Image (cartoon, rainbow, N blue to C red):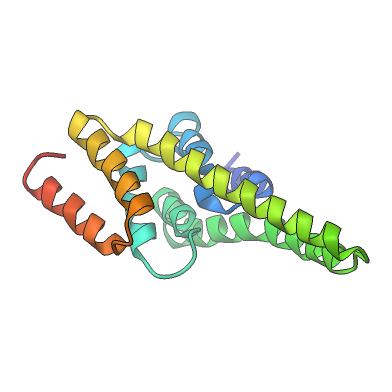
Length: 173
């Protein structure tokens, strides 16, 4: 199977289970792209994830960058299409079903449950990725410290990004 067809098929299937967005299943995407298919190495994956998070726009930028890495512009377009079309169609019909429900209480229950599930998946994904890319006690301390500061304070996330950059430049992380 050619690389572009493989990219399209595997990312289309991945899209069907990417409930909560790409970030919710980042460890699965990491496993697919790095461990199973060897499309890129773990450092490149982490770099592309960082670029995608720093860029404005949708979180699917990580997938677009993986496609670009494997096959240039054609790979980027195929990867982006593959990650969007299955879930887009599925969500369209699911939302129509929810909107046509007569019972408002059930409608709200489904929406709240979906929100809670998405948040849980994103948090679990963040933890799994941090376990895969952190290689020192300082990196773990920065990660846990960022979580604590985010939960307990109202600091702007840019302060934490600046702190992480400073510690990286100084060679601590």
